Image (tube, rainbow, N blue to C red):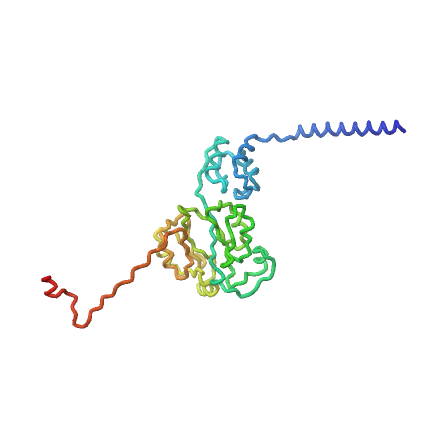
Length: 300
């Protein structure tokens, strides 16, 4: 009986040793040697793992940087140009600077401007609501207000305003990681070039309905009248599908278009308030009164 137990122990031990040797040989044969620079690049990144670079996380982005022949097409939005300069220095490459961007909400249809036509009682998710129906207002293009853009933001840079029912971006915190842009099923959020002092001019509407229909569903909707396009001296505004769009690259922030918009759908943010235009003084001449100075006045 003791011999059976002994033989069992010896056979199991031999099997274990053989398996360990085989696994060791396989590991040596198929082992992957990582470039040590991957760790250095990962340490230089902000570790946000937000996906704004287009990769699953900072580790994947670091691997892509090490394997790339140049830095073209590689950029970390939260880290910005300074971080990419450090990464390029580690890899012995030259970083390509990019203009900083910020997220912009292109819908201003608040509760006051866009009256509700029905009540939604489903899941509080824009993705779910948009798959079921066009929305609880007459505008099928606007924000649904359930906050899908807020949840994926890792930087606390976007919040829902309970008074307007619309998301608002905190420019100082926004890193242009693109998470809110991808989360919005209505595509009302876009990344635009960040100007000095966070100044921006854009059409806060994506309604492609004809003017009358758009205005009926939302009082601040773009009606595609074309007045803004006519006054723009930089050819930065185009009208397509009854909707105006301001190109952030061509726009020079001259502020000529907002005053001519009849529905106030063009927003100008970060500028000093406009000075009120002086009212013209009408000169009325009474009957028999001459606007020429009298002889007495001339002598005086």
